[in-house]
Length: 203
Image (cartoon, rainbow, N blue to C red; front, top):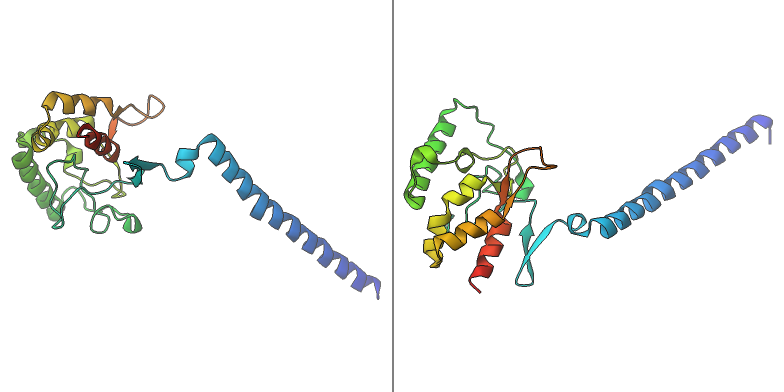
């Protein structure tokens, strides 16, 4: 074997060993280490931030869901999330906003329709309806609503469930989440977690 052939073979052997080492380190060791850290330090987040009710997983705190009947109509006994433009509504496989601009006639019509419906079902002044109750989020999967939106729905939910409005209002106030890190964003209410707590009030 010539010196050139030996040099070439050596380069191939070095490259092969480097590939093996990097494959094991980055393809096996690193993923296992990150998984272990996640399971030990943040197990709830690492496993999808799931929400349970009655021993069953009913959803994730990170993805919103609809509370409607078979015809897609909002159920009065549940707090309703903000509108969603993801598929038929909160479809995690079709995350998307409407991409309608503020002057888009379809958006203006949709807001007017939602405003009229909410005013009728919740018995509130159309001008007092929070904006997040009328518009979808950019992802279409936002699991949160504003405290004002949740409090607006208290009377309807309480009446539908035969509960006192004060007890339902207290529940909503207990579920208000502060700003991230104390400074980012606005206070929110996770609709799924609120509805799970609401269902436990009936038990």
